[in-house]
Length: 120
Image 1 (spheres, rainbow, N blue to C red):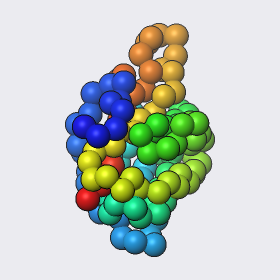
Image 2 (cartoon, rainbow, N blue to C red; image 1 turned 135 degrees about the vertical axis):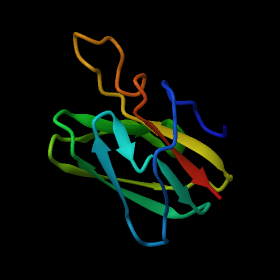
Image 3 (cartoon, rainbow, N blue to C red; image 1 turned 45 degrees about the vertical axis):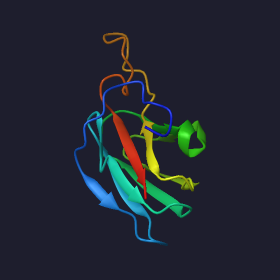
Image 4 (tube, rainbow, N blue to C red; image 1 turned 120 degrees about the horizontal axis):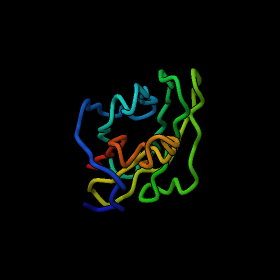
């Protein structure tokens, strides 16, 4: 692992490869990002377009990718995250840091809402 570890488990569900200049489409479905594995080239400017298909709030954060302030993805709404891919090849985690609520003390990441950017 090159970047900071996510605060929850990661299991790949869908992989996409970024094409230079084209935004990567990502959906939030339940407690998962679809796609949650994104392959990019070192040094590329990356744009992720999120659509929240869930009935509750989500967010995106990735200190390893320089996204240190969470980006909110509103219920039924969209959000865009942009960053410059690191020059060092490796795996960089991202996650949703939204709390689950009073009935479950774990946040979304701790429940598996995590993803990985693979820099080649």
